[in-house]
Image 1 (cartoon, one colour):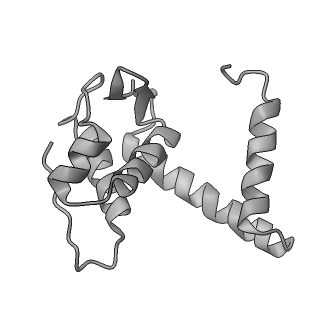
Image 2 (tube, one colour):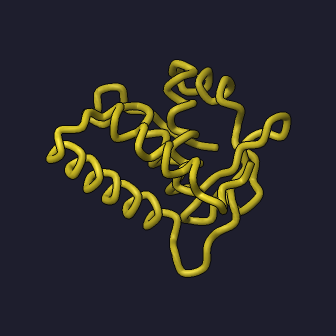
Image 3 (cartoon, one colour):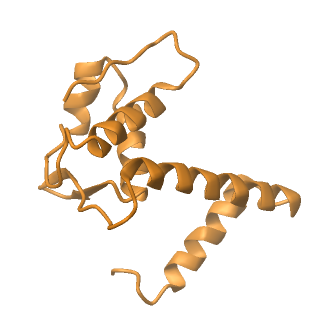
Length: 129
């Protein structure tokens, strides 16, 4: 996997990794089922902290672009029909901004807003156990 990090960029490194992988998936250069490097390996390859790459992988997984399974690693997830991978991230980011703005308007902290999402997620009957 070919990624380059611009350490002088205003874009944080985790975001550069996330966007780079999303672009590789969207273009088909990382096909469905392709294995991504381990977090430690990619961090070492890019000269980044492990937590930086881990954050990128978590966000990619939250967007439905990759799937991580213990002992099997991280792979490119099956694409949802009609929703290009880049669009997933764009729409998810827009929804997150709107939710954050609503929470601020209500005077709720970021931690409080995240706790609300976790409560709702725990109540979801379709949630995998």
